[in-house]
Image 1 (tube, rainbow, N blue to C red):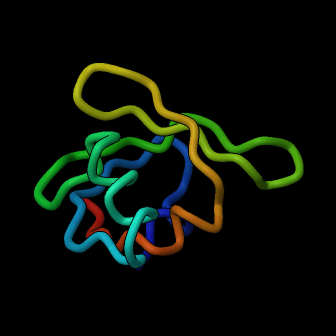
Image 2: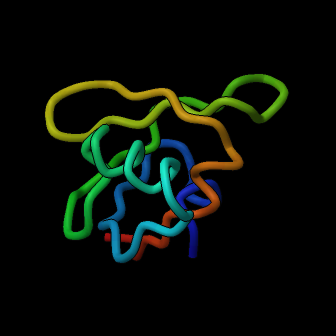
Image 3: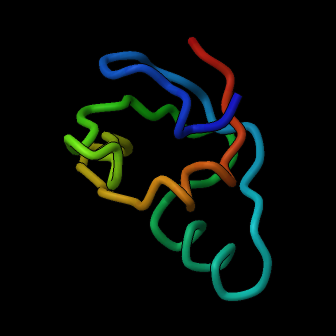
Length: 74
């Protein structure tokens, strides 16, 4: 499953981070690296963006970017 499919309140472990070039580097720089546990906090009313909790902070990312991150639910 991908991060954008994770239900609100659920936790998952990042398996792979997709994307190419600058997008992938940006995602990794934000702390979205394999083996990191993330929790879906909120989804905006129109479904985009998504707010996740990881490594002690909240991060808001676009649904399009979250669809490139493969996770496994905990």
